Image (cartoon, rainbow, N blue to C red; front, side, top):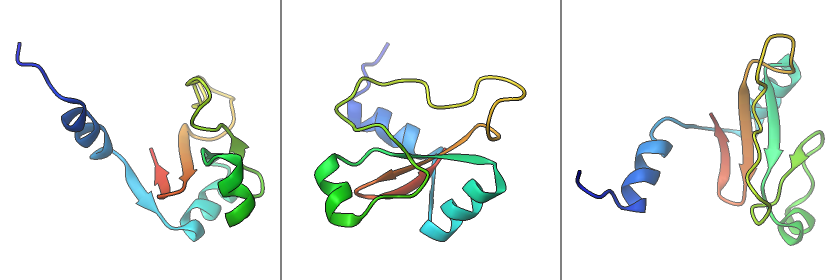
Length: 90
């Protein structure tokens, strides 16, 4: 097996994500088809403003499952993540 570096792993994972605009993120949340997760640290949320309705999980917190797991749970399994570098839908 050929070792794979972290850059290759990140590139492969990011290829499956789609960047969305703030308007697209809001539309997905309002439709009930997405959950918005804000991963910015507190100082960036203070400087850039809070995202109403977002679940805040700072990047330095341990990873937790953020996607609904079954029928009847909120959303359609889409998670929109707000970070300092933009919004990603996955």
